[in-house]
Amino acid sequence: MTKIQRYAPFPQMKYELLISHRYLFSKKSHNAINIVSLIAVVGVAVATMAMVIVMSVFNGFQGLVAELFTGFDPELRITPAEGSVIDLSDDRVKSLAADRNVAVFTPIVEGQALAVTGDVQKVVMLKGVDDNFLRQSNIADALYGEGEPILQLDVLEYCIPGLQLCNQLRLPLHFSEPLQIYAPKRGERVNMANPKTSFNQEELQASGLVFSMHQAKYDSEYILCSIGFAQRMFDMQGKATALEVKLSSEGDRKDIEHLLGEGFCIQDRYEQQQDVFRIMKIEKLISYAFLCFILLVACLNIMGSLNMLMIEKREDMQTLSALGATASGIRRVFILEGLMIILGGGLAGMGVAIVLCLLQQQFGFVRMGQSEGSFIIDAYPVVLEGWDLAGVLLTVMLLGIVSVMWATRKIQS
Image 1 (spheres, helix red, strand yellow):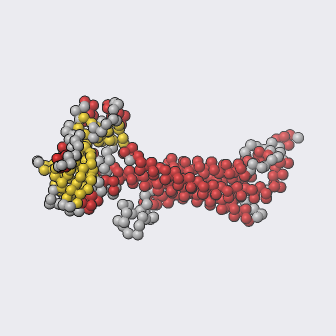
Image 2 (cartoon, rainbow, N blue to C red; image 1 turned 180 degrees about the horizontal axis):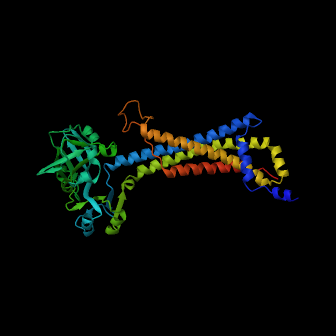
Image 3 (cartoon, rainbow, N blue to C red; image 1 turned 90 degrees about the horizontal axis):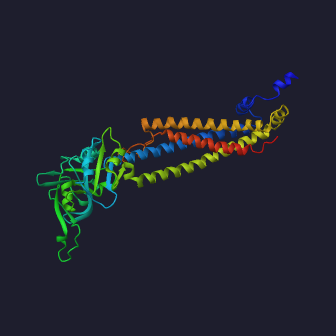
């Protein structure tokens, strides 16, 4: 009697793990069950691998786009919360320029103007910058040609246009005839009798340089010039349309917000291009949702495998019940087997995906095109992120647990 009392109650979870492990790896009487179980593991592994790789490719493209915009966009861009003009004599602006948290301070003046050369004309975006504009961003790496990045020398005004804009205006790098720039005078109506009197008109000389950011938004529209030239063209002496700031190593955005207070809008690089990055996030989420459906199909294989196994092990279930196992305990045997399939497939797929991504980063064996130079980059960029790996594993486990619980719901005492 003592012996029976000692061994009748099954040790919690121990026998369930032992039996589920044996069911998973032992040979079944019907070979189809082994095949379905293998398909289930492979299906979960492939779906997990696809999710990790696709998420990593999206991360790579997002990083590439951010790097391309870094060459033109400042670390922080400050614009007025109301209106479109910043008074450079404002005490807060002066304090910002002298603040120790600011490594580079560049007031800019942006506005639309008409560029005319010969019989070709085009509406362009004129961007007037200070002499320190090369230290503000990485645009120096995007300059091409033979010349010096000088925008003003004595009485002459020079320009650095975008590469595509040069082609549209049919301008060589060293154009001999100056580029004519027209901008409407502020607060004046166009004189229909003599329209030229309603426009400010000045000339820009060739610097021998162009920039190429590989972004049509910039390369086909922008012309860099001195801030003094832009202020005269738009009648904005002593004013700016925005402030570009590069922080020092000790600087922080919150320090700038505290210094300026209300009345200014501060944007980092991602906020300056929020539409582009929002679209990329939406594309990533849509891809993630489609891959979840593929994973759900793989989980259906797990349900089929468990159902077939429960039919085969019906006599074993009756024996366990006769030995004192409860219905919930027997159910946990099959739940644990399903979780082993899910976890094994998920970890295997994630491991293969990580190895493939690391190989792609190192060797770039999956290329964008057949010949080098066809695209901005030669191989697909991939970036592994811990949050993505955790999210994929969590998704695999959640969908797997739901499918396993559904498959074993009918087990009763």
